[in-house]
Image (cartoon, rainbow, N blue to C red; front, side, top):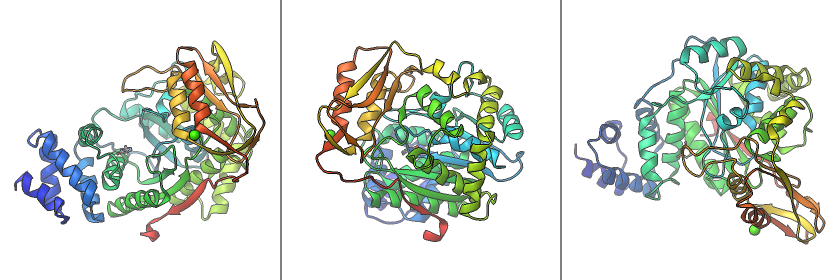
Length: 442
Ligand code: URA
Ligand code: CA
């Protein structure tokens, strides 16, 4: 086999065999295939796509390029969830403990935040002492006791993805649906879960900006899961405004604690998406017969405080000071030098928000990182005061900034004002949930 012939074949729009894909990926990971050939191949994939069989084969080959977590010691269906990345998306911190309280086994490996979206690990690390790096033995012990743990991915999880992503980033091949789907699913499969619920974000703050692309990504990932013997469902949810009101690490943890304490109404978008994800997880695990039962189990876990107790115990077992997992005490982790209101410069209705800009504003305050390894400030960020569809008057606060370092403050305020469109007429609230994709939809 010659690499150049395989690039040619994909450039001609033909289907590659599993052996041919293995040759390319293994050769690249081993250093036998140079970056320029892998880049040319990935551009051919971007332009011509891949069949479901090719995409599943690519995913399996990538998955086997490094460590694979063995969760077989854990009883029951091992559940995982994944979000393609959103602003103010603190669903994991709510759903994982809630599902555990309903009898689920949630052994989750998570990523760090990069760019405009926050990472679950960074949010958890806002609790003093909490360690997201755990040995496999400790991880399994914590899940066995508590039904839930959230840790960082092992350094050698899917090295093929790290190498490919580094090239995609600089060769305009990030946006290819088969490449995104195989990147995400290879890591999910290597993390060892039997059943995975995927939250595919759509809109201004998401990878996929149109509904059509978002559903295609959702279907591609469900197809990979089904072809590789896992139970996978995907939901497509809105990212045209931050999901929760809080954007920032401790601020988002605080919002998760409030939701788990029953302080956030059911009509709230964050609540709605958390319920949707939790319902799908319970149904995939066979822990609920239908949506209605799943929903009432989840609600009962909020009302009884059992979900919050799981989060608290998880923090403790992972070495953190669990006294902060409390709706009052958590405020101590959100102490900043100054809080600044960003006020509306006109009256009207909030017609749209650019979630990416709001995420970037929080990042500029120190809540997120521009490049891998940058430090984050757990306390800073912002809390939105309005949602799409709300009426605002002149000078009304649109959001509160939590600031420690005010060097980029003017830039941040300008970005927030730019991100929130205010019009004379009310265009109404947007739906939060666009659809659910199961293996029956393929
Ligand atoms: N997230 C990933 O893990 N990989 C991609 O390619 C895109 C988003
Ligand atoms: Ca604008």
